[in-house]
Length: 158
Image (tube, rainbow, N blue to C red; front, top):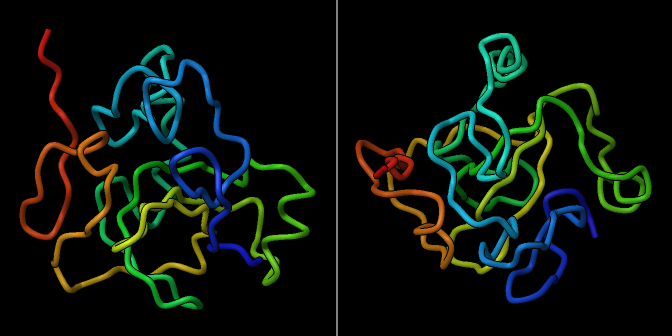
C-alpha cells in the first residue's frame, strides 16, 4: 500500500493508523464533536492561540477545501491539517513509498465516492477546481454546508 491509499479500521477505512478510537462517538476521530473551525480538528483540546496556529499558515490547503491526489487521481475534501508528519516511522516506511517530506504539512482527506479517509503529504495534492461536492458518509460529521466550491464547518450552538 502507498501513501494516500486507505487501511481498513472499524466502519471506515482510514489512510492513517494512529487516530484515537475513544470515545467512539465520532466515526473517524473517536471524538464527541465535529470540527468547528479551520484550526479545530474535532479533538477535545484547548483552543489554539495565534502562536499555536502559526504552522497552519504555511499549509497550502485548509479544511473544507477540495483537493485532487496527484498520484492516485482521486478527489476529496480536507478535514484536518498536521503541520508535519504525525504518524509512525513504520507507517511512513510501508505506506509513503514516494518518501514525501515529513517536515511539511500532511492532510486528512475524505475520499469522494468512498467510505474511507487518507493521510496525504502536501506535495501529493493539488487544488480541485471542479467546485463539485464530494460524496462521503462522514461529511455531516465535519461540515454544515457546501458553498462556492468549499465545505463550511458546523457552527457552535451554545
